[in-house]
Length: 480
Image (cartoon, rainbow, N blue to C red; front, side, top):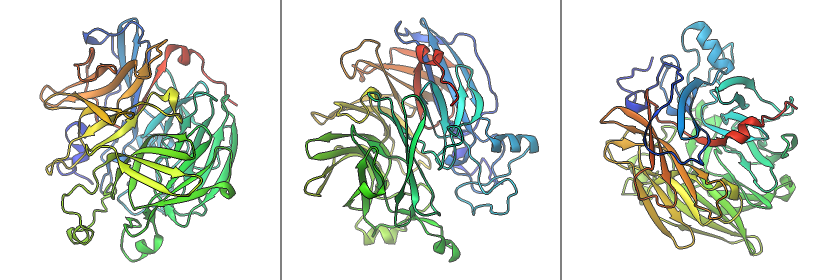
């Protein structure tokens, strides 16, 4: 059993909470904009029982934290995502599954792994889904955050479902993929209509199974990242981790027409790297442009290279797994690739005004990562707003002892400027032991929050969130 005294992801504000609550109106410091009416929901890991084996942050049961805002007032509620695995363990009264850092439980009668639905959320065709990239999504009913159950598009879902699907706000289509680290062709790509019908699923051939967390879309294309965090069973047979970063293997970026298949994909090579999250992609003349948070390699699965390996590769600053915003240009005529760093500030969890997904944007927002040798787990001490046209950036500081995460951009109703809206994120004040939802004016990110909503219980650090307006909530999609 993992001790909370030794695992950084089970201590401090990473530690799970047990209570599911619903509050009266929250205390608001400042003033909520009258136009801000809807619900902010964020997903994240929260194990209901003491984990078995070596616990990783990615392993915990999904818990949703939601703040519903209406007419300048707000209420908070949190709920577990009640997956099959969650209910089996709840009935047993203890944990049954181990996690990513342990050998798969091939003899577990309930299956070798648990779909935790703990990573992200998507709203599409009148339905909110809680996502985990190893399995099917789970439908969540708003505003009470009730788990409806697994959602498989009427039984048509033929793959796992990425944590980062993309919705084209112009066409209404949603694109997603599912990867398998062990079963060729290793990748399947799907398109869902604006009405919520699964239109197509096509196989995409990869030379080896990889961990593929995110992808990107443009107006006409879909981009996949075949990066060298590979899964090789032969390593496991030799007593080594099956997942490993292979720095000698190039990164490959595949570009195919949105409704194309494996025969239409073009692959471009670039130096070895890893990307967890993309900011956006768009078309510019003969080029497809990708913006993403890039790292030279990754230690996310506990697979750190040795100091000798770092010295052999000329890495001396200890920042090989620091993520920084980069841009790639893929020329569809010449086949060339240009890669450049846009900043040297470590950051991740990039977001944009998502009404412009797949189109060129002027602004992007990331969470600023704290790099310190004593940090055993990721902490974010502020936000960065990037002007992608000028290369300039501005910072929003959470304040001393205050840490947060991904900020979701909420456009002001009727706004004509791309950045006219608000950034919403949970922040934890470690000195005051106080969790808050902060509302930041995206036009003036260097200023203090215009509103701070005090949450009456701790909100652990988590992953990804979204904003759903009351109009959207009222238009719940029909089951196909």
